[in-house]
Image 1 (cartoon, rainbow, N blue to C red):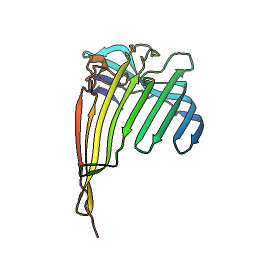
Image 2: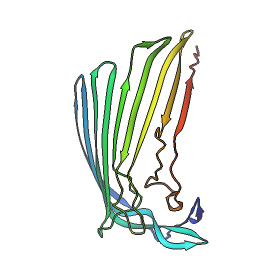
Image 3: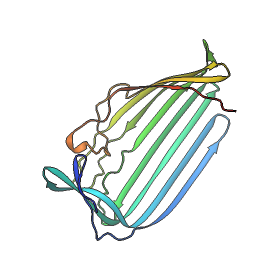
Image 4: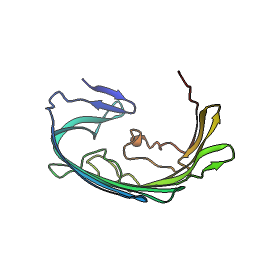
Length: 221
C-alpha cells in the first residue's frame, strides 16, 4: 500500500513480498564484583525472506526512490560494556557495539548503524551547598566510518560527539525537587549519521543543544 513521498524520499511498497522467518542465537557472559561489572553479549540472526527498504538509482518528481524488497540475510554483532567504580563517588562506563548485516548473495544490507565506542565519567559528591545526590557527568561517543554499504548507498564518515551534564536535588518540604542541565554535542560537531533520513540532501544531524529539566514530585495520599 505504500507508494508516495515520505519526507524527502519516494517510498514504494511491494505487493509480492512473502512472510519472513527468523532464527536467532544469543550468547552472553557477565562478571560482576564490588568495583567492576563486565558484560559481553553476541547474537547471530538468520532471516529467510528478510524485508527491508533500500535506496535505488531511480527518481520520481526529483525524489529518490526507496523500494521495499527482500532477501535471505544474516545479521550478527556484539556489544561489550564495562562499568568501573574505583571509589563510591566516581563511576566510569564504557561500551563498544558492532553489527554486520549481509544478504545471502554477499552484498551488504542498507541502513546498518556505525560501530560505536562510548565512554562516560560521573562524579557524585555527597552534597553541594543545598543540593544533594549531585552528579556531574562527562562523556563521548565515537562512531567509526561506515563503509560496509549496500549498493546505491554512500559511505558515512566517522564522527565524535561529547556531552556534559550536572544534576542535583533540593528538598522542598518533604519532596526532593530535581534540577538537571545537559549539553548534547558539546563541541558542535557537524556530522551525518548513516541512519539519517536526510542524508541524501546533505543535511547535518542536530548541533549543540542544551536541555534543562526540572522534576517536581507531587505526593498523593
